[in-house]
Length: 470
Image (cartoon, rainbow, N blue to C red):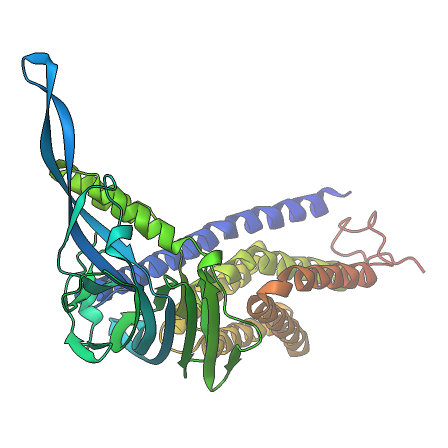
């Protein structure tokens, strides 16, 4: 290989490596802008309301368990005496049937240029409870005496700031207004409604119903605490994302431009939510006052089974822009390769400075893309940024290559390249196969274009024509 050709290749490789520096800086800028958006979400959540989680309703039965124990007499191990002891306990009773019908409206809240999806949910909860027998409550022994406290129905709510109204529960034939707090460390924050006095001497099934208006941002969680759980959620938002321990039934799930409707049917046989809540409650009961903080921390560390629906943006501009920059080096390498092949075939030298200017224009496309996409739709921002770069490079190359037709040809090639990149971005699941096809097509085009070039003759002198094998 001639020294001139070798020097040219080394110069192109050095410029390609140099272009990686501004690409890395742009990737860092995109990550910083993404962090700013996360801070905006956290700021809105701190000022208004967070993601929401509903646990319940659950019947909370506080009671005192009194029992007798025999202990040695002090200073005389040969004698014993009977003393009375008492323990305060809280027992949780879960619904036999739990039905939830939820409907969501969505809107935006803004912090600077960043917007966060905000939802307003209206939920109707119905079902029934099987009241337990007093004698069946956990106790120290069969002879212990139980004194019931104030029994209540509690609903755990992640962020009570999102409660829009004061709900009233229909309990049997009575209507009872909810109050603050749950009375159970297992449920955390939320609401409770004190039930009328009951002796729990005989079993009974009591129906309940109440409406709950609850606001939140981006995601709503539910825990299936009933023996049988039927949940139906609807919204006009067309881009839901279902997650958690359970997914909605595929048979009844509908997602289209008019919104979504999803249904869950979950039995207590398929979830450990009840056992997890009981374990949390029993763990809290065994902790003394000095360990209350540890009990609260333990509750935060345990994730009760749940499922969720997220109201997501169809396009995350920062993730798409970051993915686009990962193809930036490929853009530059393909363009430089095209220039190099053009030099070989047309014997029209291109200066390294001209390579560098074209490379910088290609790199600035990504910065222009993320800047515009923060204010307008991503597809529009992509069209504007790519059109601006194509026109600039087409105009510049028509002079560099000393022919406007050549500049136009490179502009068309860049249009195809930008179109292929957009296809890679919007088809994440097919990105690998599309990228492989693109690279194969580019390699094939280079091999076809240079199939008759005598590489031993390339770069001898600028005056000598390139020898082509016939």
